[in-house]
Image (cartoon, rainbow, N blue to C red):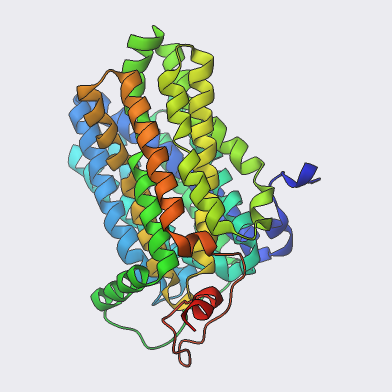
Length: 433
């Protein structure tokens, strides 16, 4: 692929690393299966109960299970073979999909089965996501982390757009049970492809108890200035991640539109995210990638300002697309800075903290937006959310000096010999001397 102006996404990790190519393909197929479930489970739940509360309950059960799966998945990834951890987790998820399919074939499907299977899927998804984040950097040179992050983000964005549409077609043609079985087949393909990645043993042999290991990971994240700053900036990203809950009221009260306009605006962030990933080639060549990450945090909420101030659907679409583009670039740069500053011995646990933020981010952002929406009209609420996010982002850019000074250069640390805390970069060493 020709890299026009150095902007086009860097696909060299797919060309140069066979294990990464297999892991990437496995994840792409896995996202298809997960995307089918995103549509099929709510559809079946509502079909059985006619209750939006039950639909929310199933989603909540899955989210809670994913939270704990993400948290302890990092511990497992630092203790056991990471490839095998992913395979076992996805196998458990596939078993849950088969159970859902068999339950759906019954004359009277049981809701408790759906709740249990949703929890299994959430738990398995959390474990496999944390383990995959820890595995990826071992398949590539560290200077390719931004490129890997862009490719991972692109598959997520495309999966978000394509998989639900595919699910709708399968449900219409074959029904909900077939959709579950197709998801199980996709998961089997994922497990098979990961076999070709090769062994990925966890680093080190001296392992703590699971709880103590988790505490060690949290302590490291809290004591390492760059990792701590990344997680702090992630809190702000969480705060501005829930504007979609205000869209129905915004379309109705401000734009005077209907379902078609609402659907268009719901798709806008994904469109922006795909554009951001496809034009992310420059991210791998940014020397001060920590500063670039913080700048993206500050500018991402400006999309909400444009949305809130708009009175036309075109501007609203552009604002949401800009928000999605900023979010994608932030994810790519955060992935690179996080992986470049985390030692392999702790990568699973640190990755799990990032995953926990991702899992809870939309829920917390939605609550913040919903709270503002109770007191302000939707356009004003979006303006307040966007302006506050940008101001706080600029504040973080000015105060998180260690993140701002972080570069793409990585110095490997020998944990047995270094007097400096685990994962300390060369910049921090020089700053303390």
